[in-house]
Every structure is written in C-alpha cells, then in structure tokens.
Image (cartoon, rainbow, N blue to C red):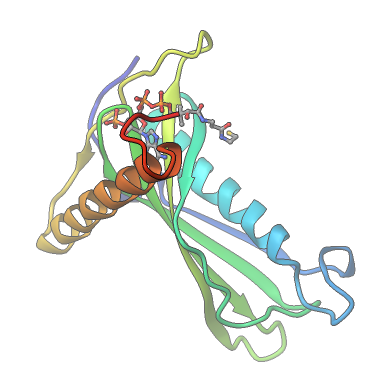
Length: 168
Ligand SMILES: CC(C)(COP(=O)(O)OP(=O)(O)OC[C@H]1O[C@@H](n2cnc3c(N)ncnc32)[C@H](O)[C@@H]1OP(=O)(O)O)[C@@H](O)C(=O)NCCC(=O)NCCS
C-alpha cells in the first residue's frame, strides 16, 4: 500500500453530463436519486485517486437541492478531498447546473461524504495523509474534523436504542 502523502488537487475531479429525458421526472427535472448517485460516484472517484484502494461509502451528510436542473442542462460535479483521517477520508462534492445556451451556472447542492478504505477481506486499510499547504486548506481540514465528530456522534445515536446505553 502506497501511503505517500498527496495534495487535494491531485485527486480533484470534475464530471460533466447532459441531463437526458431518461434522468428526469414528469416535470422535466433531474431526479434527486440520480443526483445522489452521481454525487456518490464523483466523491468516490476523488477518493479512489487519493487512496488507490477499494472503498465503501460510510456516510453522506445532510443534502439539499437548492435549484432544479432541467432536461438539456449540463450537470457538473466537482469533488475534492477535504481531509484524510486514518482509514477514512472526507470528500466535498459541489453540484452545478449549467444552461447549455447561455452558460449560466448555479450551485444546486453541496455534499460531504465519508469513504472507508477496505481490503478484499473486509479489513480496514490506512489512507495516505493529505498534504495541507495553505491556511485555507488547514481551515477546511479542521472543519472536516468537526463534521467527523458530529457524524460519529449521530451514528452512535442511530445505533443506540432510546433509553439504552449499549449500541445495537
Ligand atoms: C462503513 C463501515 C466500513 C464502518 O465500519 P465500522 O466497523 O463501523 O467502523 P470502523 O470502526 O472499522 O471504522 C473505520 C473508519 O470508518 C469511520 N466510520 C465508521 N462509520 C462511519 C460513519 N458512519 N461516518 C463516518 N465515518 C465512519 C471510522 O471513524 C473509522 O475512521 P478512521 O479509521 O479514519 O478513524 C461499515 O459500517 C460498512 O461496511 N458499512 C456499509 C458500507 C456500504 O455498504 N456502503 C454503501 C455501498 S459502498
């Protein structure tokens, strides 16, 4: 396993595709589930490029759909690793719509996903550290640590039945 530290820019990914009628609801807007699928893929690609390992999606944080994206528009997904932990890492995925005729772009969603690196036998594997060069990248990573603490707290709440102190 190559644990050479990497920069976020080395794995940053952009996916672009046109929204086709098959992706849409009867109103002609892309289905939320299709957007979620593409977010998962865009996040996974950046994390695969960072880790070069097998991965599973462990968590997707709160997701909002701020604007609809219509058939004929482009959907653009930009993903980059915000922080690498021990066997897991966080990736940010920004989703934009772009009108093909005008080029007008809107941010439609921002998602934070956590992936866990696993071996074929299911054991966890270490992920390469993320190189942090700038104050802004340090701030982003600190925020990722805060989100991680919150999502692990939510996970414990989800697996611990109300009134019990032992997880399921
Ligand atoms: C995600 C999964 C591997 C975690 O397993 P686990 O035994 O609960 O977790 P572990 O104690 O081995 O922790 C491994 C890492 O995952 C992180 N993790 C585990 N659950 C997490 C969650 N819900 N959110 C964020 N991180 C999580 C841990 O913090 C740890 O990270 P670290 O090593 O960087 O500190 C396991 O629950 C699983 O396989 N889930 C199903 C995944 C799946 O099928 N996804 C969809 C299809 S790919």
